[in-house]
Image (cartoon, rainbow, N blue to C red; front, side, top):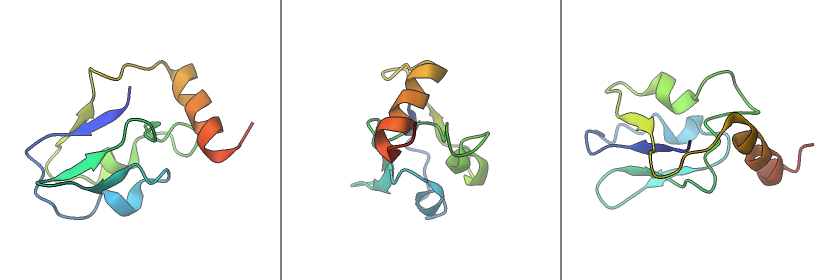
Length: 83
């Protein structure tokens, strides 16, 4: 699954630089995650780095973008050109 940032986001700016895929950006009211770029850090790290650094625990799995580990890895390979 891709991740989403809930409206509990306090715009603290710590998640954006942690994303290795550049999937996080400032939205109208809070930060947002582009599901086309989010791999939950599969291929980069053991855990989702944005979730690790979020001080208010407002980053959750997006039920509208369910993906298996294999699908996330394939997305990682497509984004990075890794194989």
